[in-house]
Length: 98
Image (cartoon, rainbow, N blue to C red; front, side, top):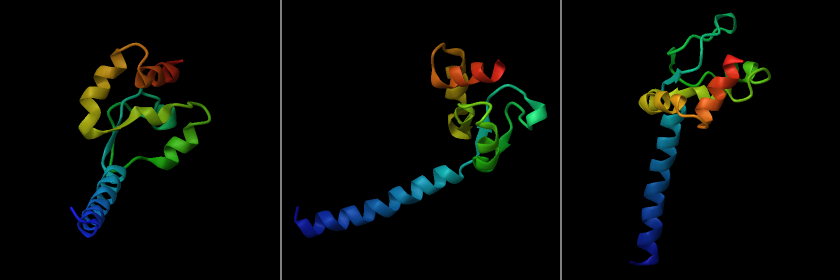
């Protein structure tokens, strides 16, 4: 394959990767942590996109809260991981319960 063809392929791949990253950033996410109604958090709430402002406002109190907001497509696996001791989402869940 010539250098010109390789460069062309890389140009085609780059926008596709950027588009996928943007879609993931704007994809709906689900909160899988415990209910903390006083902070506006309810288990299984779906957000159109990651609620960055809410996460930032709560990170002072709950350092790993961002792990509890998962893409809806990955929610089933994340729920299983909450039950497994030592997984990052399990530790984040335990932090919220304390």
